[in-house]
Length: 292
Image 1 (cartoon, rainbow, N blue to C red):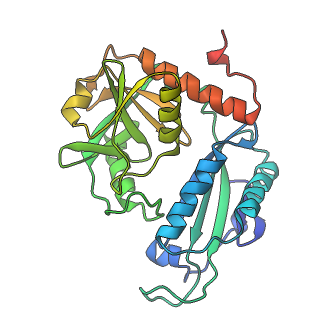
Image 2 (tube, rainbow, N blue to C red):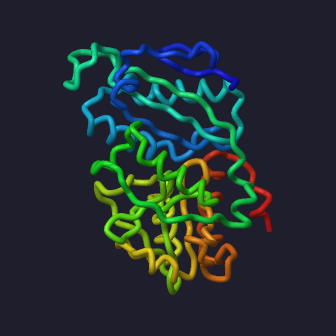
């Protein structure tokens, strides 16, 4: 691995980025994280990113390591130092270094870390061809609205998906799809977007928020409710969204072809609307695939 990492108020080469063996993130998974997209060397969806990070920090009683303004300035500096054009920033905050004890330590400075991820997700061929998903059991904890760094359940589910030749796993609880291992899940039926309502059972996806706002603006019907695997298999279209995939069509679920097996018209429209939004926010030119 190459590049510059931000850790504890310092920019260092990857090989020098280290944390204490007594950091509570390392010992307990006691911390939260975020991934924010970068397009044209600019952070996009900035405000929702800060709001969700604030929600996670408050939920687990960890203080912001810096002001929000300084946090953004650090991430922008990290983009410059790594000459990142397109991709994302992974950033996490843990409760910090303290003797190993389950109870929270008092007055312990948090540990803050961030690094960049280069990825071409605007013109990815996955958007043209679609991806497959498989359903997996949702074995996670009950506060999924917190973007916790304790991701073993998701790792196990993602591995199961990979072993079954799928791009993503859609987690299922009590017969209903909750969300993807690293994404939000949607189906489309009769020109209506169906996705699970926000609660402690799912992460409040930023792309989800943006897509639903765009849908409302363009008079696309939305139904926020639980849906079953059987409904997903019978859907006209299916899609997923995340920070580093943006919006991707799902063309197979558990080996069953969705619709005609190609990215659907509604999914392509939603992806186009979202990409145009982030390009406008980043000041970049329209992507090749969306030029008329």
